[in-house]
Length: 109
Image 1 (cartoon, rainbow, N blue to C red):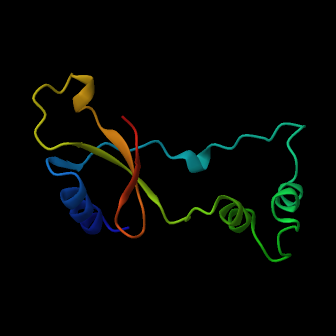
Image 2: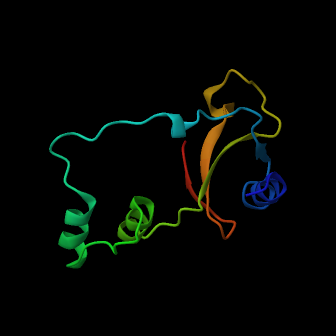
């Protein structure tokens, strides 16, 4: 989502807050190997739905199919617009999950 749209959503959904200027760590560079006992995605899909993923499905598409969640959700850092004490834990940036429809669907803290 564009920053202007995110700012508009934050102003509407969380009055008195703004997008943080802090950057979140990029998780795309972190890759963790699955454990040896981790089942294959097609096996999990078969247990859940009675059938595997289509041949042309990518792991992300299959994961979306299993979880029912949109891959377009955005995680953004939000902070108070005028913090009284920046060292107070309550005034530190918090992560908010924003849906493509412009609603806050999850939050940290």
